[in-house]
Amino acid sequence: MGLTQDQAADLIGVNRGTFKAWDRGRRPRDPELLQVISEAFETPIPVLWPTDENPIAAESLRALRDLQAAKAADQAAHGQTETVLESEAPKATVAADAWASEQPAEATPPPVTGTTPYGLHRQIEATFDGKNDVSPGTTPPARRGRRLLIPAVVSALAVAAAGTAIATAGGEDTPTRPATPIAQTGPTAAERERAAQQATLQQAKERGDYDQAISIAARLNDTAATTGLRQTAAGILARRARSAANRGDLPLATSRLDKAEKRYGQVPEIEVVRRRIEAIKNAREKRAADRKRAEKKRAAGRAKAAAAASRRARSQSTAPPSSSAAPAPPSPAPSTPQPSPTPSPTPAPSGGGSGGGSKSGGGSSSGGAVDPGLY
Image (cartoon, rainbow, N blue to C red; front, top):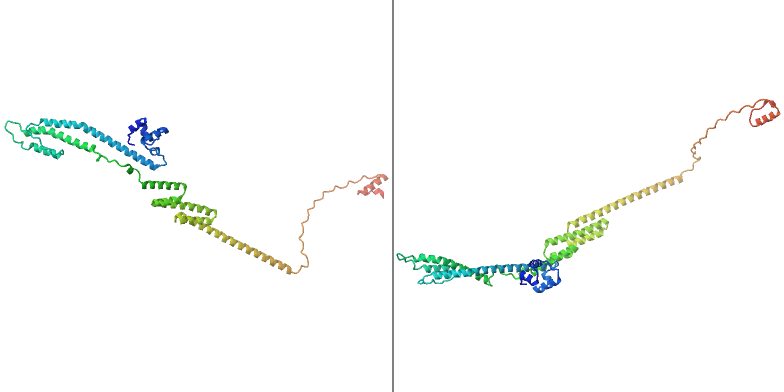
């Protein structure tokens, strides 16, 4: 795992962009390539590319990758610093040698008291001590010394700064940013346990196991979650009890309410359903009382009618028989049709012999007029 991205990409045989995509979590499709990468980094494949089902491993891997990236950035910065200091160190050495060659032969070298700015100050003081006597017609040695010391002091300061920077950058015991151990970047055992319990709590809520969810929330000391879960579970049982009450099964509704109150405590939903059950009971009692009063009223009416019939029967049996029957009511006369008018008989003609008399007699017998010639 100590390889850089470029080295790892060259080792595997892919370009850097592809490797960076893999390093950000994208998993290669080729199984053989997966095995090669796992063997190159000496790390199992599930650790290199964890699945979504293991968020703790994914978080640890991201922390490890961040740490490696920071370490690589520090190493690159240290390398740049060392390169700059190595390029500036020869220049400072050449300037110091030039200053030493320009010094007069009779001048005593200044005492070396250190490489700090305070030591350089002491060197300058030692150089100027005893050099203030100037004879007529000569150049003051102090002025000449100042002209020589100005570039020398600058070069010495550059050398001192370069040495300090090199010592700081090259030292292994005082790095610019101390590397954090991998064990400290990932989650602790307590954090992993808490994350696992929270995941179990969410799964219990999704499948409706509120008893397990409440127990896990209590172990996590999450008072708000515990209270919310208790209210939710009690509300579910209260709704079931209300459905049973609406169906008319009041004992089942009451038992469900008692169970919810015993498990999850008192909640407003339970009180609402209890009032609903009491209202149903009162309505039932009122209807029963109304039916009882109506039945009593009907029974009293039947008894009264029976008593009246009995009194009428006794009065009829003790009354004397009547002498004449009651006249029957006249029946209506049937309607008779009017007779049609009969035509008057026509008179027979007079005259004739015996034959005519017989005919007349025949006519008399038939109801006609009497012939006067017969007498």
